[in-house]
Image (cartoon, rainbow, N blue to C red; front, side, top):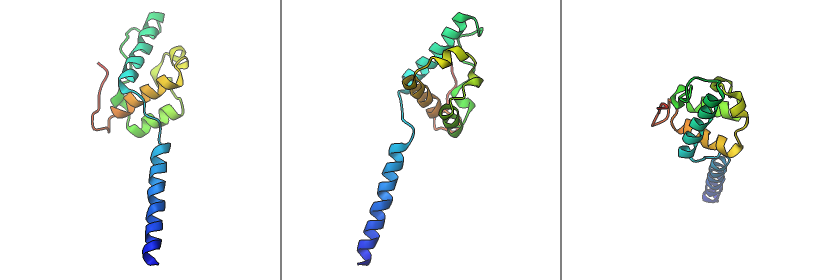
Length: 114
């Protein structure tokens, strides 16, 4: 009887772990995210809002938790180019988030925009 209870508890805990993983923020294509991120700044430069097509914020500017908060709240004021960021669709935002998150300052592979 005791073994059955232990097995049931373990099965419930394992189910909760898999459910939590499934509900985690969707992962996109980090290569496409990097391309889209740069494309936003190129369009912003062509419009004349910024002087350089190089993005102002590098992925290593924030930790993974901070990137989650920025993208969940859609708080893109730090990036500038409000018009361009307002036009980005959800799929592209997921790709950009994946790029930023996977190269955040506390990630195994932090990266700066080159």
